[in-house]
Image (tube, rainbow, N blue to C red):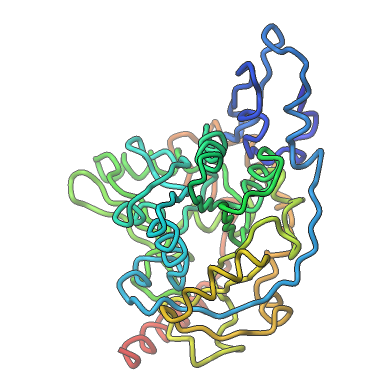
Length: 388
């Protein structure tokens, strides 16, 4: 049976949970808020399936001849609603128009981030935009397998470790499956996010109605976090001012496995990788208008086929893959662990009503850096006014 002896050896992908034939595995949050499998010994039949499908115990190997593109959706409305260039929506629409279904991460009625599927173009909007949390996969690997067995086309999107989990769970390739992953920084603690959200709800005197991590109100590069509340008030801060994003970007409370991610490679199991094209101003400056440009990595023939079908709906330019990765190192390198992480989580429960204070104490910004960022923000706003 699956046993987690080292937290860094479990990405929380849910492959074991989906594979168990007697449903004896549940996903339980630990004291940091991350989900891990827990086996009920009284129900376990020792079939070994949970270990067999674990993508970390049994890492699948593939050698890709990765092709890189800078891409922008020609539909400006979709692009503005998307985190970067709006390419995911084009891929998803293609599958749905062919009678297929699309799996992705979305917020449910309780604003928990979960994996789900849609079969209409109208419902794709719930998947747009980055969500800086780890979604609960639930039974979606099982659901995916059922669709595939019926011959339905499926696009499954997720983090690289979630795609690894799905492929390992399925145990074979399916011609009617397209897997799309992202270049992932890492996933932060859901517990920390809940405390952050509760603090804001207390401050604004209302419950949260909507969460958006990647608004482009200040531009694509200086994206903002937005929480809208039921009393029609809202909280909005750019990524450098928002306290949750500051701790996230300083790697203060990421999942342990993210500091040694087994899925960071160009030899991915996904067919297509989508990301923000950071560094676009140095590689293809004519595609940099600060409204969002996607880096698209084609990892398989299936991925190349569907991408080629959509090129008339996008502005696209092939780029050197190594040059693109130089500005997007998270594709192949794990972030370093923050040396203050252990101390932060040791104090976390004592700051349930003042999480901002705790995060701030471990992520303080120097005065000179504050001045530099303020100046850069002003210049960025001036540039957008000139462009518009």
